Length: 191
Ligand SMILES: [Zn+2]
Image 1 (cartoon, rainbow, N blue to C red):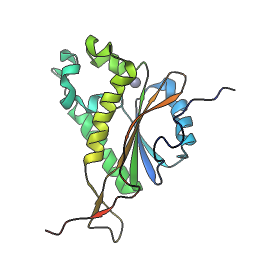
Image 2 (spheres, rainbow, N blue to C red):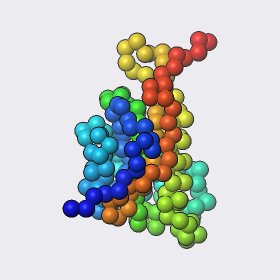
Image 3 (tube, helix red, strand yellow):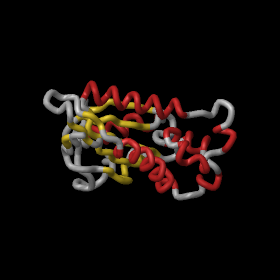
Image 4 (cartoon, protein in one colour):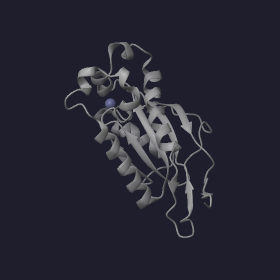
């Protein structure tokens, strides 16, 4: 039986709490994604949000020039995709104390082919996915989230975000992390 290639141990800090996983809907890689999450000791420790193109359509406002114009005209407003994702992040955080997000992009993504210009698609595939994944990762990470737990009502923290790319054989490569301390809860400034 073959084994999959995954990022080396120590490449990023493994989550100590629960995780929200953001992936594409692609049916070819469902089992491969689960294998990777099990490898990272996340079995039954993650909420899963799937949308076509993973990060792609949540970042349109900051990356419009890379999208085929006709995909953005008429009914091409994808703001509700982004809003739905962030609503679910907030819900997952409330229910399960999410402190890390995994953004798992993948090779040969149909949504990328449908939405992006020829020029953009000619770029290195992994580099292209990294650009959109990091764009979403920044938006998630740079926000300050209020803690819910008793005694932490007046504290806030940042969510760690780890970006990956999975190929059609199920191998996973690391793209980037936006990570502060393990538990960077800070007291709010008294105004
Ligand atoms: Zn896809």
